[in-house]
Image (cartoon, rainbow, N blue to C red; front, side, top):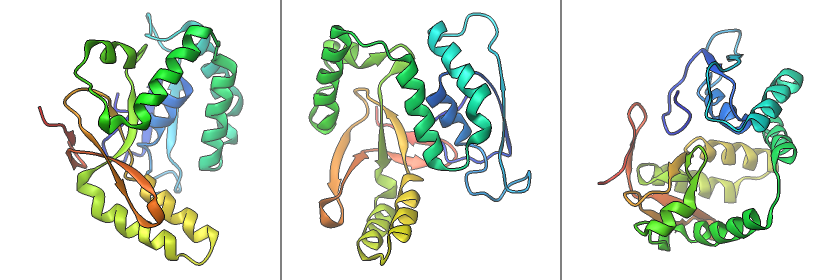
Length: 212
């Protein structure tokens, strides 16, 4: 199952149920440009997983209930954000240990381009139940496009145009795993808007080429 990185476009998705945010990532590969079949709408078919899926049973149950009850009401990008927040509001079980780990991770990812990702303790800290922590960033291959769109945001006359341009920038988002072979760098656009750039080239068919 392809969830992240590749800029590919399909008419329809058949997938087993998973956590809500992972499902959103998978659905993001369907009808990305609004030009495919089903009268301009992408189709997502979700099935109950078989066997022993690698998910927390309670969180998976919450995700399935959310899919059954509210997936049909999605009409905008903000609906995905709202429902993702709802999923984690239902699923999150706070603990002192979790809060401390969150604070530690946050201090690292704020300045990820300074972190030493070769340390064993760092790798253990950044590992999650579903793999390694990922960060929304941009490939250096797209920096010129990002700069151009960023400048256009500063000169846009109205908020709707700004939002449209911001959405175009987000189309270049890549969820990149935080591992030693991947190097991050902070770059700035107009009005000191900060972008996290991964020092690797990107191919829309093959994905990100991390240096090893």
